[in-house]
Length: 287
Image (cartoon, rainbow, N blue to C red; front, side):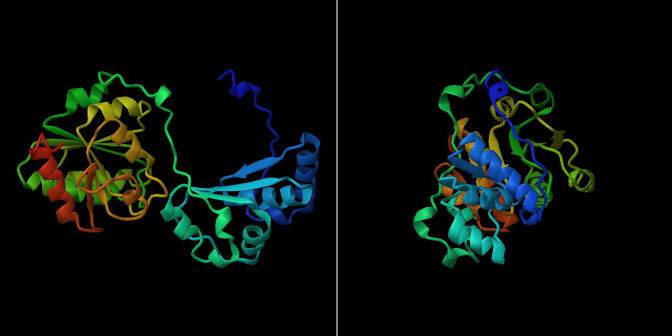
């Protein structure tokens, strides 16, 4: 926290069309020049439009766009100008993100300016204490412990995870699935759990602050996301030596090696997803 307190900040309100506001452009240009900034980095579309145009006019040497969203960028005039003439570096967080980002803008971008850089984890900051576990999982868990973590959204697809849990339950396997996260699907997931009578097998944990303890507490990690720019949670699980079952789509194959660090299942084959999970549940050596 001490280091964070030393950061200098320059607050400015930015909206979707702020790049059309000459007063905000001038304000940023003056800031760039006054502070002699030579590199600016943006990670959201709102920021990079206003910020990159101002930086270009101010003569900033390096104008960098970090992209973590694996969806196409609109082929608008302003985007074409920025990607072709203004950005000096474009950094997607996976090849999947790169492909989608440049789907409509690829012909306006010099490939040499685009470099994929994966998210990393500092090994010196890892908590390798395997005894750090969540009390609620220790208390309520039975059988093999399955885990999922992420926002409860359509993207993360947890409602399909409940259907998979029902298929596993029908196999007569003893397991508990703990889902960490909050979001708009909470009520829908609660209804599905009740519908399939999985109250003793599926637990919605809500927000979990200590993800290290969560990962220590599970045996297998399941990811049902429809898309991921970079599945950081997969890396977190694998660092804890947890086997993975995920769909073979988006950036997942860039992280998980099929049949080695986990199983990648063709989307949306829920039967096979359940089958691979049951295989791991029943085979301790394979896990």
